[in-house]
Length: 261
Image (tube, rainbow, N blue to C red; front, side):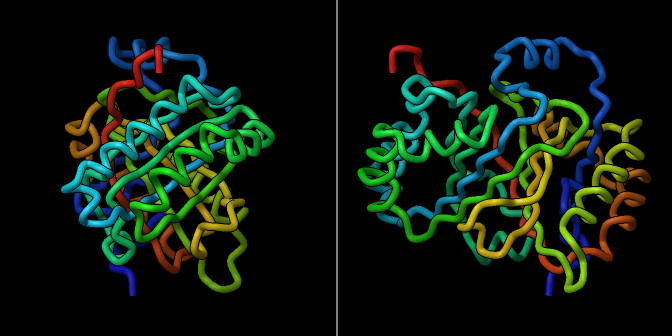
């Protein structure tokens, strides 16, 4: 049974619950994030999330670090890959996340589903998966969705990101959840919060998770700063009745791979 504080499909779900916001207030860091790369701010991106549980020995041997490097290097090798971050998970924020136990996350974006399909079979990607991911992983989970949020959610180095995956209760349709989340994020838009992307999963490797969301904050401090906000609590109440299980985790975006990789 998922604890109440984790029973939400967006970054309102944990002991450091941040708020979702569609409205993007201007700041130098947000301006830099928006200008960093048009690829990271595609209005309706295809989101591709991979959660990797690395073998313990891979961390001590350096194989996990090599896996991260091989995947991050795809940013300069695969056409159609708009954005990619690969790195360690910072915090597991729900019982479902702790049970799954991912140690690393890959977050990438594409303008279209065919771009994602091309990435999946590209020789550089296949080589990275076969040479580094599969030999060094105990478990791999993948979730994909088309962004249903009204605004883009650009990502820049140093940003903190909360990933939330959700399973809906019996009798609830996923589009109903997506609509409810859209309304909740819009209603919560005046408080401190995130640039968000969310939608219905279409990956066959999602372990039953039907909905995904990423919420992008300028910093980890901003992610943690909205705990207890009244609008957050209102959004929780609006969405909670639709949910069965929720996985929540945080990560921090690292620098891009060198251009010559």
